[in-house]
Length: 93
Image (cartoon, rainbow, N blue to C red; front, side, top):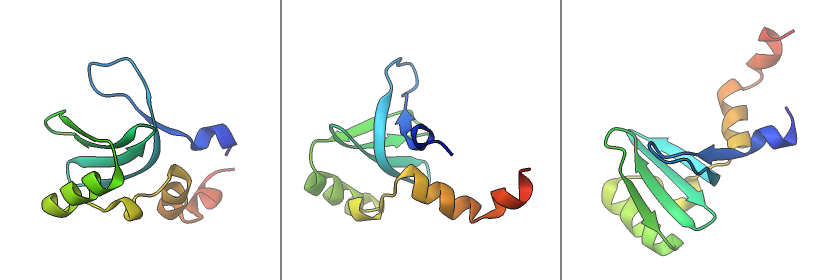
């Protein structure tokens, strides 16, 4: 895996700009993520997004709606490794 393959990004439906995602976690229909400008929660069902400029605001919202706190968000590489857990080496030549 190349270093450049470890960067996650997000493109909201109907938009053309990519948003660089530092850490994220999916909980139900909600994609919770930290981005360059703060935090975002994107609802995959409704396509709505809620923006937060700082961590305390995001965490207060997360507690209210049963979403992961900012400290529980993970980067792409750690989630990739957790998902595959070494199996990809057995399946790929």
